[in-house]
Image (cartoon, rainbow, N blue to C red; front, top):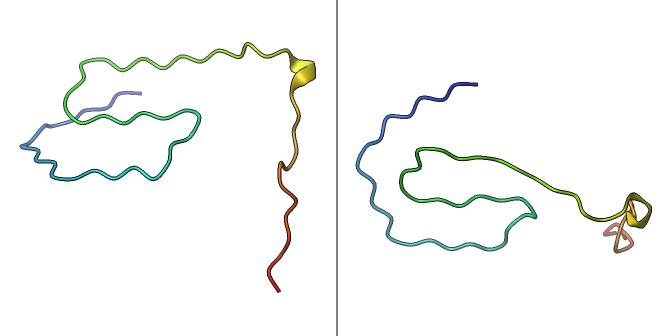
Length: 59
């Protein structure tokens, strides 16, 4: 994938971050290179897939 960016003037006055994901990037300004990497150091048998909080529909 090739991404070409043309930088123009940037002025940031205010930033409000409500929350972030487990994998997130927040950047203001220039970066020549951004490298993505991930690791999974938890044993597979300890992985629990399912809802953490029971879902109760509004009614």
